[in-house]
Amino acid sequence: MLDDTLLDDPRRLQAVDGGGLLRAAAMAGAQVRATEEAATEGDIERMIGRDRPRALVLLTRPGVGPASAQLLAALLGPACPVPVVLSDVVPGWVGALDLVIAHTDDPGDRVLAESVELATRRGARMVITAPEDGPVAQAAAGRALLLPPRIPVPGALSFARVLAAGLITLSTLGLLRADLGALADELDREAERDHPMHESFVNPAKSLALRLADRTPLLWGLDHAATAVAAHGALALASFSGVVADVAGYPQAVIRPALHRAAVSATSQADIFADPDDDEGVPPRVLLLAVSQGPVADAARRAASESLRGADVIAPAEEVTGDEALRAALLAVRFDLASLYLGLAAGRLGGPGIVAPAAL
Image 1 (tube, rainbow, N blue to C red):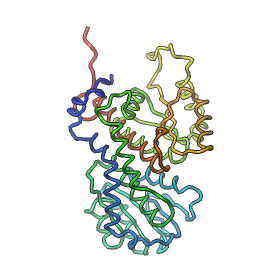
Image 2: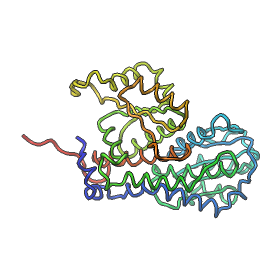
Image 3: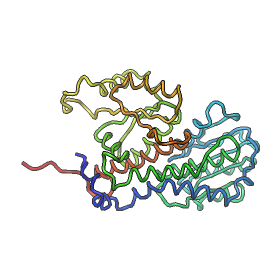
Image 4: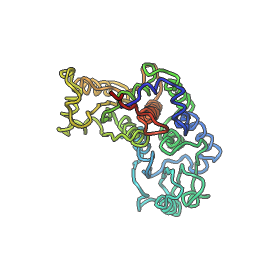
C-alpha cells in the first residue's frame, strides 16, 4: 500500500529523502543557467561557428540522451533546413561539414569516446555534455566543446542540462530560437509549484504521483515533443519508482488494438462501481501528454479525449507562456518530481514508506 500521507508531511519526506533527490530535481533551472554560462565561457561561437552544417547528428547514448535528442529533433521539425540524424554512434559518413551533439553521464563510455575520436579526426564540429574526466573527455580535449556538469545531480535528473546544451548549440547555428533565461525561470517556478511544502491537491507533481500509484502508466504523446517527454517520463518512473510505463505517440497507440481496448475500458465511466480487486494484474492509467499549441494540436487533443474520456491530459497550465522547448522541459521536470514522490511514498527510495496492514 502506498503511504499517501507521507506526501503531505514535509518532515517525513525530508527524513526519507536522505539523498536530497527532491532538492536535486528542483535544480533544473540552475542547471540551465550553469550550462549557458559554461557554453559562453567555452566560446561556443568560436568552437562551432555559425555556418549551418551539412547534417546534424544527435547521439543517443544511454541515460537522458535519447529522450533529449528526440525532443530536439521534434523541436526542429520537418521545416529544419538540414537533415537531422539520431544514432547511437557516429555514422561512418560523418565529415568536416557536419555537427554532432552528444551526452553521457558515464565518463568511461568507450563507445562514445570512439565516436568522438572518429568525428573530431574527420573535422566534424562537436558539442558534448559529459564529465570532465575519462576517455570521452580525453577524446574531446581541444577538438570539441566539452560542457561538464556544474550542478551535481544524478544522471537521470540531468535532462534540463542536456536540453539546454542542445538548445544553445542550435541557437548558435541559427536553426532554432531559444530563450534560456525564460526557460530557467519557468523551471524554477515549476519547482516551486512542486515544492514538498505544498499539499497534494495544489502540487502538480504530487497529484501526478497519486494518479500513477498502483497503475501501469500509458504515456501517450499527442505531438512529437510530448512523445519525447513521455520517453523521459518513463525513464524517471523506472529510475525512481520502479514503475514500468508504455510510451507511444497517440497515432501509434491507437493501432495496437488489444492495449487500446484495455485503455478504453480503463478510462470508461461505465464501470465506476466495479470492484478493483476483481481485475487481474495492475490496471492501466492513460496519460495523454500535450506540448504543442495551435489548431492542429487542439484538434488532436479533442479527438483523443473523446476516444478516452476518462484519460488524464498532462499539459502545462494555460497561464504558462513560452515556446515548445519551455513547455516540454516543464513537463519533464514534473515527471522527475512525481517519480521521486512516488518512489519515496512507496518505500522504493530512502527510508521505509510502506504502510503495513493493521493486524486484526
